[in-house]
Image 1 (tube, rainbow, N blue to C red):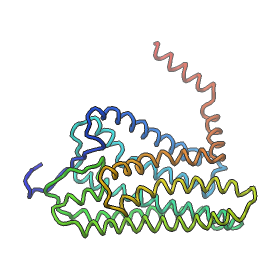
Image 2 (cartoon, one colour):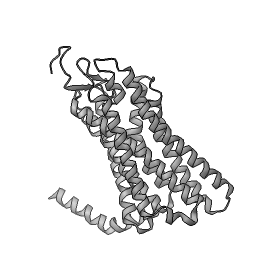
Image 3 (cartoon, one colour):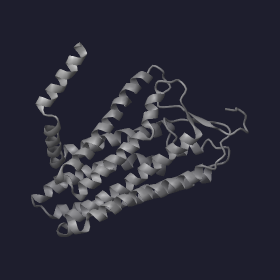
Image 4 (cartoon, rainbow, N blue to C red):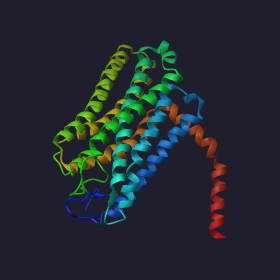
Length: 324
């Protein structure tokens, strides 16, 4: 790459999570295990929902789609971050950087709208139980998922439009483990104050509007649940607790980063790790630990595919090949 001030930047240098070389092997191990847990946990939910006929309901259809998006959110940057722990100079090409910006806003934007759809599903189930299956038909569920991806696509293309034509001719160090849009735009060779405001306004509008819709939805639902003190509402309260916890964990970091853009880079790093790593790994835990139907379906799946006789046969075969 040419180093003159008038040359076009062809790659960016990612500073990563830590400058300490001693920490790199430890971080490599930790985040490799976390990423593996994300893949296994979310794939397990998708497999459980698709394989058990009792879970072929709107709520679990949306939950399986949430798990798929969580896998996408965790995968757009985490594998590269893990690989970068093993190299001293962490670089990413200009096109790959734009791709990361595209996918992070596509997946997070889609997840925001999908969480709103899940709140609407709970609203109909609790506030209009007699009309639930009519309103939340399979066609409606598919439309809600498609709308979430469409909104995510529109959001990310609008964000990318602010960046793709910016001139990058000098600094190329991004103080993060992936190409975060606010950090990349600061490296442009022109004044990006207006562009930064437009980026924050775009992301802030989507984040805040989705969050406010969720607050209104869950407030109405909680009032309805409170007024109905029957035993049937106990299950609704448990489900609501899981949903509200997931919403808080996801929207907290996103709103802090984009609606409050004056935080320090070190804080942004922690929050970026939170919504790209910890939220996707916590979602399966939250939904399975508080959901008896999912736990029962997983037990059934385990007994079907992991019978003691099958496990012992696999172990014997492994030991046989090792001693051979």
